[in-house]
Length: 430
Picture 1 (cartoon, rainbow, N blue to C red):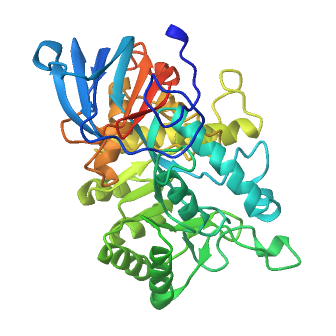
Picture 2: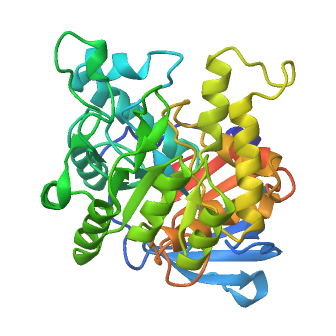
């Protein structure tokens, strides 16, 4: 990479400082850094600016604008980024840090056979890889059998024990009894489950409160799953149960979000008051209209579908388009045409952590302009996930930044060429 930049995590320090990973120091309130990139992507669609600079002071953006209008304060550190685009740090909307790719180890085996200590060690590496990919905030949507261990990961990042993005965590997630996996009928014993079972209005209310008490930032529910008579996806919870979850979560200031891949599961979840729908494969015109009316965003998880199709033997560009992939392409086209807001969230963990740019590439391949996809990954996700303090290069927002070589608004694959990551005003990857 230009100027010999590597992709290692440095010591939570400024560019000129060296050392091993250690405690994350708070950016000094008076510390100023002036970034001079070839171009800036502010976070709004088609918001590329050339000849602009950005000034951070402490952990916030202090100024942004044409170079002539943003003077460098005395003592400010200057970071030149020739031939690079500076963007808001990416916000990953759907990750599972306790999972690793299914072509390495099947999901069931990860849940049943990998001890929590091993899964946690993997998760630490996954967080570092995610940060190196330019992701400065990530929503972890369920530990998949690892209990409430995501709360410890989040604290370790906050305390600077391990490197990683800012985390929003969902804890264990909620499932209806008997609906999830590992499936009971496949075992001679009652296997541990990948999420927390709860039933009835009273039961789901109690479990939502328990998860909040364990540190969950969002509540995730599996509104449908593959538990039909022939193994097909069917709704799991009643609308009353889903509404009780949403109301309980909302009373604590937290959103409810739903895994949903059937039209009926999506309709029940949207009517109940969820913030986002994850996957959405079976969406219909009725579903999309209701989502737009209620302001519910869609996290399409395109990369997970392409990846699992490849694991089953599909070769992109060689074989005809896999049915699951074709369905995703049509789903995204229909949802966008109906005016549904699209989140950036690939279900990373199904595929390798650090490959977050794959979802951006597929959003573009399936019809978005690069700038639209980048909006979804920055200012869009900040809006849909309720994070008004990040996602755009605006004065007062968190100084969470990523610099990539070239212009990703023209070539989205440039998002893989990360040269610099800044978290709260501190360079953490270079």
